[in-house]
Length: 172
Image 1 (cartoon, one colour):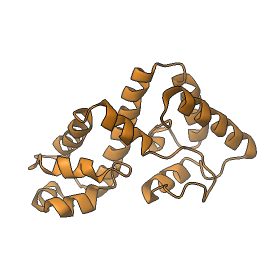
Image 2 (cartoon, one colour):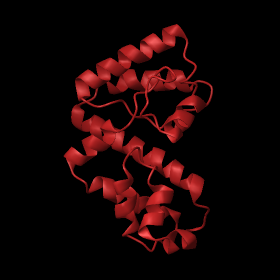
Image 3 (cartoon, helix red, strand yellow):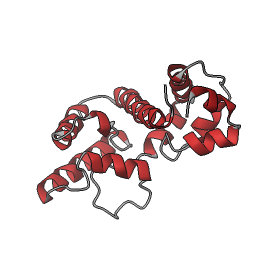
């Protein structure tokens, strides 16, 4: 779909196409649709990002909390969206060894306890092959940050995730 086709969609069609870009948050696509017409993909992505940025901290936290925990065993998380399942599988998070699963579990619990939200990272950008290690190392490093820093980082990662999902749909 090119940007002209994106601009021609009704608001509902736009939400139907892009509503899953942000995990369980189609309201972001609905708000972004009202910022059309987009001149290119870059301005479209900026519109989505601006919706998130302007939504306020309580709504931003709700958005972060809509994301799945990384490294769950298959079938454990019924809320795991198709895109998230595919992205986690691409990083090998659906095939963790018992030791890796244990480390993810400990890190996820520590992160949730400290920040009150799940750890979010764009797994598609974590790197192939060593993605599991890169993600676990990032979890450990980010546990040292403040709640404010982590909210900013989580939103940055969420925009990266959504950006890649949107780029999968929109041609340049």
